[in-house]
Length: 61
Image 1 (cartoon, rainbow, N blue to C red):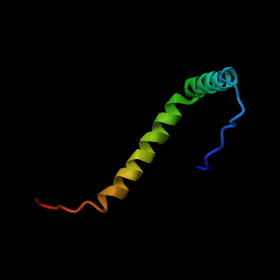
Image 2: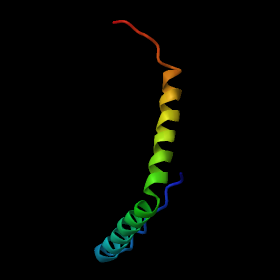
Image 3: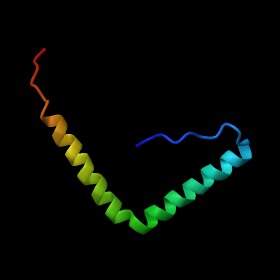
């Protein structure tokens, strides 16, 4: 995911307003899609975990 540059000209008050808006938006999205998001997150973690298992060598020290 590309990183979006944050404007350097925002005041602290403007930055806080954006931060609070994003936090509220995140909560609204979670409240609406919680079960679907949890399922998707579990699926993605399983996929990543399976990818790492492929390289899991038993190295004895």
